Amino acid sequence: MKEINLIDIYCTIHPKRKTVAYESTSFKLKSRLDFFLTKSKLATNVTRVETRASVAPDHKAIFLSMTLDDEFKRGPGTWKFNNPLLQDENYLN
Image (tube, rainbow, N blue to C red; front, side):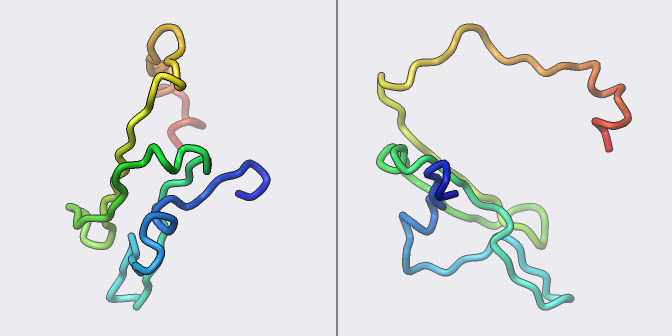
């Protein structure tokens, strides 16, 4: 993270909150398995980051909202999923 200047944006925005994204009561485990890493220069663009209850009983959903100014231009074209990958056993595994 240090080498490429990434930060855990949730901890940056909410330094005093302790939250977990995974909790197993049967195994008595709690963890922050799911989180967002952002470039530190993008931290000021993040407007909201939070965890919420989800349909999975042991995982919370994580949300990130950000605003991007004109400094961040979109590249040409749009991304399209490579459908033949669905026939590739290695990809599916």
